[in-house]
Structures are given as structure tokens and as C-alpha cells.
Length: 144
Image 1 (cartoon, helix red, strand yellow):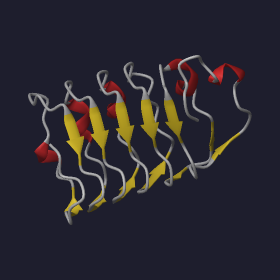
Image 2 (tube, helix red, strand yellow):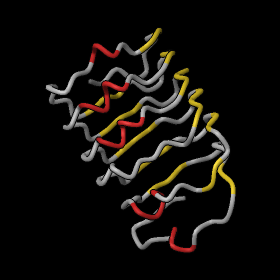
Image 3 (cartoon, helix red, strand yellow):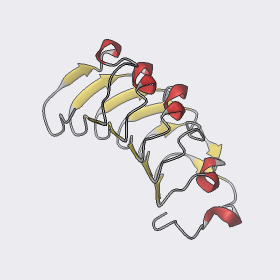
Image 4 (cartoon, helix red, strand yellow):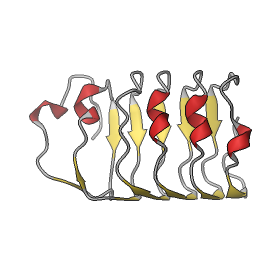
């Protein structure tokens, strides 16, 4: 489902997504979507890429996104997301994550930074604090 660079507005309806779908991509970036990220996205077991960046999405990231074990790329940057930095530990295939420029709660660097096979971590302007873990610089990490 590739709908980037349009003028789509309003919320992303949870009824758009269900567990019986075989979607590989949800690409809604660079629109004018608002409201929260529907938790129903977390039920699509075939997803590989989720791009919801550069919209006006708000609220917390649904916890069940971590159930998406086949997602390799997650783009949530440039929204108005809030609440805790999501725990992505269940996303075992994740190699690229960008959650920059959101309003997450101030928190320490999440443990999944060092526990997932990430090549790229982009977390600019996300309220992270504390020490940088020494094991963060894994051989597969290309960009931080």
C-alpha cells in the first residue's frame, strides 16, 4: 500500500488493517494524516516496511507494533508522537529505525538499541538522556 507524497488527511482508520492481510508495505509518508497510529497495524504479520513519517500523527506508538517480527524498516519521524519511546524488542528483523523529531517522554537509551540487528538508528530530537551504552556500537551498525 504505497500512498506517499499525497494530500491525504484525517486519521488512519483502524478498519483498514486486519490480521488476515498479506501486506508487505504500509507507506503513507509525506501526507497530512492526523490522529493516532492504529494498533490494528500490529496484527499484520507479513509487513516488512512501515512508513508513517512526515505526517501529524500523535499519541503513543501502539505497543503491539513490537509483534511485527518481519519488519525491517520503521519510519515514524517528523510527527507529533508522544508517550514513552516504544519498546521494539519483538521486531527481530528490524535493521532501520527513524523516530526523529517527535515528543516522546524523556528516557534513557532503550535496551533494544543494542539487542536488535540495527544498521541505522535515527533518534534526533526524541528526549533521550543518560550514558551511551558501550555495546551500542555493534559491527552491523552503520549510522547512529
